Every structure is written in C-alpha cells, then in structure tokens.
Length: 143
Image (cartoon, rainbow, N blue to C red; front, side, top):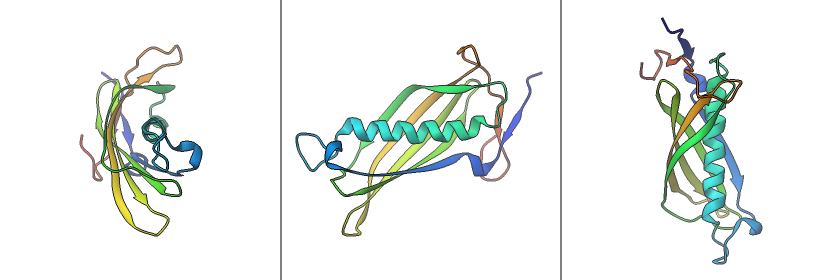
C-alpha cells in the first residue's frame, strides 16, 4: 500500500510579484521580454510545488517537465506583475500548476496578462523521479 500525505488547502497556492525594470525589456522597449515573463512564471510555479512538497517526506525537490504559456498582454516598464500559482492536479509523480498573471500599471489600471500550465516531476535525494504520495485535503480540492 502506498503512503498518502494530505496537502492542506493553504499550501496548494503561491503568489509571486515583480516590477518590470528597464533591463527586463526587449528591443521593443518598454515591453517586457517574453523570456523574463516565462522565467518569473516558472519561479512562481516552482515555489507553489516547493510548498506542497513540505508534506511529501519522500521527495527532495521537483523539476519542470513541461510548460504551456499564453501571453495575452505585454507588461511595460514600471508595471507590477502579480503571478498566482495553484496546484490543480496531483499525478503519481507529477504536480500540475496553473499560473495566472495580472498587471497593475503605474497608473493603477489592472488587467490580465498571461496564463500558463506547468507540470513538475517530484524527485528523491538521488534525483530520480519519486512518488510524492500527496492528496488534496477536503477543503476546495480534488481527491
């Protein structure tokens, strides 16, 4: 029988923020470089998974296995980008995270800028894929 570990609802999400600085823009300044946005989204997803793995004692960490990102609107220099990651699916060795990005402009306007789905594979201390054993709690999650 496989051991199960409950992932509390409070640890299935994470919020990550950053401000777009001039060095984060591409040649179409003041627009943020897509690679910068993808990197920050991956960090948000990774931190979401890290918090979940606190409850999976058999796993040491996780790595990004795949990502699918939809850029809807570009952020500009001085914009605050707010990224919200949430685990939506627990596989045997994988964790799937949705990341939604919103922009708060320097003038205070707010709008959605991106969406991404990230899949991570949990690893043990020898960096081999491992069964995390996580299940959602009964508050707002799937089983």
